[in-house]
Image 1 (cartoon, rainbow, N blue to C red):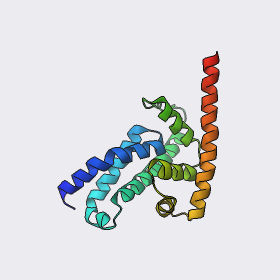
Image 2: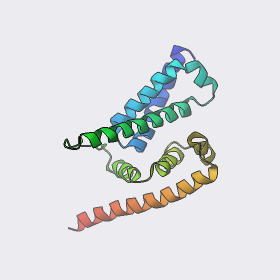
Image 3: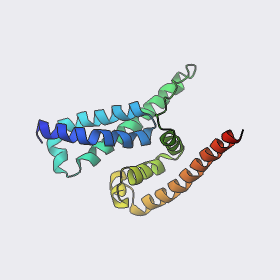
Image 4: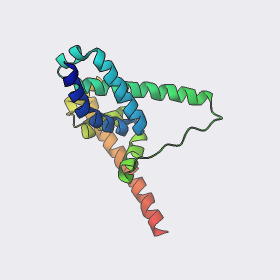
Amino acid sequence: MTEEEFDAFYAAAFPRLTGQLYAFTGDHGEAQDVVQEAFVRAWDRRREFLAEGAPEAWIRTVAMRLAVSRWRRTRRWLELVRRTPPPEHTPGPDPERTALVAALRKLPEAQRMALVLHHLCDLSVEQVASETGAPVGTVKARLSRGRAALAREMATVDGEREDDRVR
């Protein structure tokens, strides 16, 4: 892959991947950081990962793993520094998207990842299974349980909004 081809791929894929990782992490800045880091790693392997036939999937997988690693590191750090409150989260400009991301964050990681990959990244169940290393049946169960839990979370959010409007 030439530098120009890589630049074109970056320009086309970066916004899409950042949006997908934002849904996974709930933090737009963090999503941008992990996608950028994944592209840096891809640059060193550009000849190999293009030959694999799914460069965007490779970068998404790397970015998601980086996000999980960062989350774990941050959690450990926060446990050590409990006296200092964490910085406030700055929500995105779209209230519906913010509500969806907040509801997704309440789901278990495996369900959240399956939902994001399937519904936001438009991957088939088989592709989600391939990216996560889980059997197809497990992915289907995670999607079903995740959608049900997400519907409950969103209904709670909608119910709270209605209660706020009534007052």
